[in-house]
Length: 248
Image 1 (tube, rainbow, N blue to C red):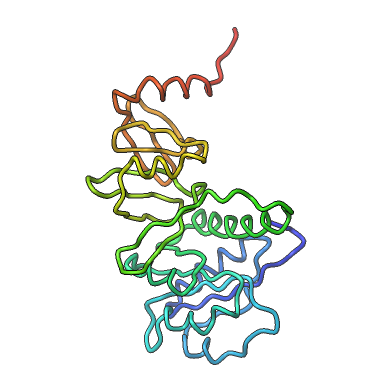
Image 2 (cartoon, rainbow, N blue to C red):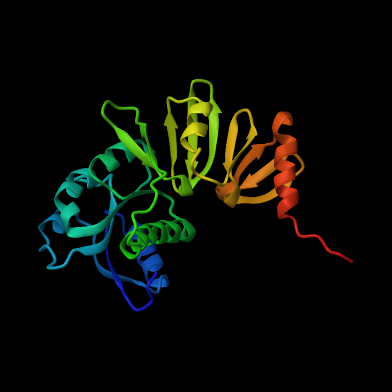
């Protein structure tokens, strides 16, 4: 993030402790500045629109009188990034339907908050500074409702898990279930380096490996993945090539 610039934030949540938590996270992030906070969604709706759009609006969904999903339709044009914060994952598809940039599932840790902010700022910085259009390796998956599509960014994927006729895609901040085969996901990731099949039911991102203990791979977000016999040698060759060894 650009240390010389402050990114203006607004927090909207009907719970005091949720506002206090996000306020603390914003204060702990040098480039962020809390512009306003609202506990009443109606007050947020009636507030004057800024001359220059905010950089971030962190918006709860499950609120009395006016839900965050309804409020977002009026507030979307007032901010550069709209990030939903909620304890209910069932709202994820509807959140993206109102053009949300991200979806943070409560309880929200400082690490999860920082990762989300950095990813959003990094994506816009790269697109504005590079005169050549970057290669877009992202792909869309169908949601569990008609005409719902969700964009998947490969650099956010931690692992893909096969579940019979479905796959479960674990990202840095969310989980998505899609009616796809492992082969179809593997083909979609084809142009993107950094993924390895370690089990008939698991593909993982190399960059999110934290440690290996015997036949278990520990990934970011406390995900554990077994190493399958068929894929063991290929994975061990990769690890061997990345392991520092003393010459003494």
